[in-house]
Length: 77
Image (tube, helix red, strand yellow):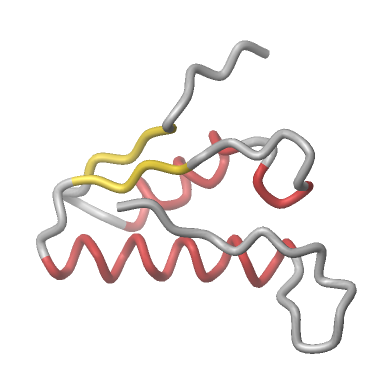
């Protein structure tokens, strides 16, 4: 499963970083409830809300019990 919203939040009706991250956590929790095995996030280095996936993965892991979370790439920072 790969999901996310990568807008800047500056256009009318477009989600900003806060909303995008909150929705990612909610989707991760819902996926865990449905029995999905894993959720992996793409790293978007030039998108402020998706440039650092580790805090997002930690937030999802803290609110779920079975789902495996990870990145689609190796983060070399």
